[in-house]
Image (cartoon, rainbow, N blue to C red; front, side, top):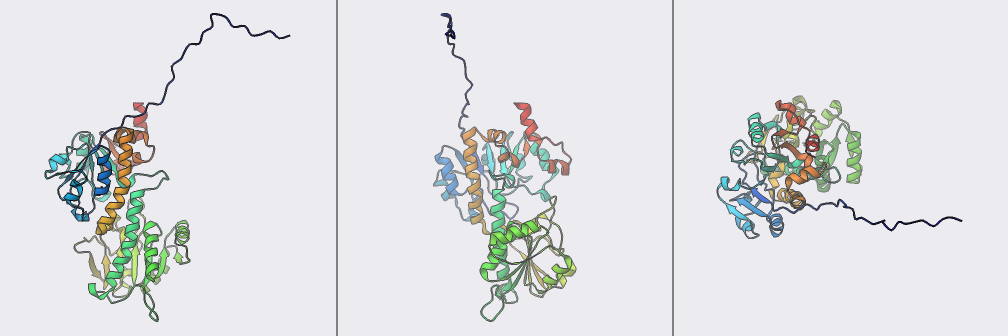
Length: 404
């Protein structure tokens, strides 16, 4: 027969401490939105709707006079939702977080405050060592918004701008084929009894896909070149129809360019530079009055005859071929582009406030926002920037691990 368990009268239950998750305290953000005066920039990073949401949650936002005019958002649109309009840039740069739709310029660097957060795009071709040195000295937390990742590992702002660029490239080509802008008078989609224009797209990424969608939608004949079979297959599946696709064989490409009415350059850069796949000889053999839209021009372009133009003077002719080589194409439809950027940044700023500020979200976001950080309190945390400009590279993950 088994014995019953014996419990001593001296036995007691002693409560022990348990470590519970500490909820971060919400932080009020102080955000400044300056007016852009460079890079042909018409976009604004937060629309009045986005500003309204943040202000209703208790955040303070200051907007420089005229900051949204390029996108037809006016001062009263912002003031009516609670933003404060300032006329002096120095006052605006007292905000702890600066949102920009164009890169930081050397004229703005002296206005930045110590330990300030700047969320903006970054253009590697125009970035200068002297500017980086000023930002490092001021221990700026600099975040490139095009490198911010979503939960699926994508880049939401890049995708939105690429969709815009693809659509806009075809609409621009249709315009310059017409007589109004000294084109040869060809309707992109053709009509009954008259064949449509021939559109050749180099690059099967997001820009290429949306250019193809727009061209097909207008009734054009479309041919797509890319050196990735996977991207070509993915593009066909996404479009949902069979179309001519090919790897970039110079002989085949040159032959197709001879008969093309429109050529779109939409190749992805390799190590920051777009591969040059269309030689000057190929361009010289294209039809007179045909149109080249080099969307890749901000990374060098993929046509040998391309050079940068502006929104004010967007085109030039070489070998009687019209070249449109405007960087930052999305700024040409700035209101749509601004809404797309605002739709990405506004929820991120909400999340920053919920976890205790921008520094907290950088530390806890995994890839997300952290992926966009290229300067952090005096450290260069982007390997490509450190290599290009000769700075010491600091891995952000190791930096935070040392602070734990």
